[in-house]
Image (cartoon, rainbow, N blue to C red):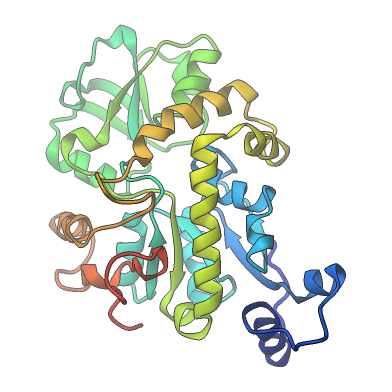
Length: 341
């Protein structure tokens, strides 16, 4: 993954002063000087650029990060990226990444001090894509099929624990829909606004069964950092969260311009797929009544930690739910939700 060159400590201090401090009176900066003075940072995506990253890419392409005084290098992901971005955060190679809530919990259990800052997708888009001809109406109906899935992920472990899965053979998930299209007795994991559209576009008969229907519903597409970054660069964190939040608000209202930008980064996704995906994703982003986009609650994090403990995927008591997130930079919630900050 291509990462931006890290600046020496003296330069960082100067950049932060220029961006977040006051300019000396009588010496206004020229536009070129202001551009040079922007603080540089990195945001790593956990998959190829798609609609689930829309708000972050909107903040980039609409100039919201620049207006906040920051240059954000967004690096695309792919297979293996969900684990890689955690490793890069742990090593201090990047400041921010996109991840899901279950990865935050597991990362903290492994000693990585991850903190979620913003949760655009309030409800998980995770589903199992089946053939309509199979007649499956709910996840409990799955039987006599191959199921392409990331078998070690908590959602898959939850399915194994809660479902009969009679004569279901787990096979590796490739990220593509080719096998689904060619095999009638085949199902695969998917995001409800992504792979099903592609499969239908290619002549398939997809139906979706939501994993959240069996009680596993982690926040998704989170903006994640570490306790170290929050401690050492609080103004940068504040700026990135504010611009990202505005990016998500604008993307959900009007995704067209950002979708054009996404297609320059991911030529495998069609204009129609992006338009469909943005529309289908919007209901998953609806926050609780009276709350703003991206908000998180201790109740939801506590339930998730308990579920992953129930799966024996983390040691009991190894993760405190209150340390997994903070609402401080959203302008709501407690002053500090994450314990070590």
